[in-house]
Length: 258
Image (cartoon, rainbow, N blue to C red; front, side, top):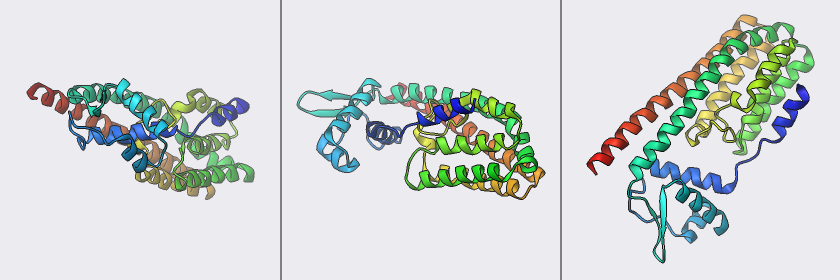
């Protein structure tokens, strides 16, 4: 199982530049910063804003057009579609479905990882504790470099499971795979709203409490720290799901009165 997981981690990738541009523009559209019917900045302006090539900008605009968010007009430029409220409502509902799946994953992780943290505090050896610490600091490095933290996040939780010296805890996380870390940009359950530095910093603070408890050999504190971490993640996803539903209702109302 360990070798398979190593392979899974190696295929985690940094998002394409065009995906980053798409996420940024979509966020502006969600916020209403570029109203329906208005023209987007020119390719040249977008190239300068994002510091990427025209090819990257064209790829991003093609993706946004495929999603029905913008439409190119021959000789005039690229415009936000007039039916943007309805389109974004559909996208919001789709993202809400992703959040609901993430909640299911977190429920399973609560059942597994609270006890694994407690056992790791008792059973870990020096090498296993070092592996947990290394994953923690790799998360920090990726965060500072503005890279996806998912591989290090998964490695952190997997190292804790490994430190139980019960292979079935590791196997359960391996079954979940990338779904175990839905907040990462490379995850199929990710949204651009959970990739902010503030969000990732909050995760890292929670990781530190878990790490300190395991390093102190305090099983009860480790269990509570893991419970707090995963419960907080559940709450964040519930709030996001509620926000998606509220946005959908608002977008439908706007479309009906527009």
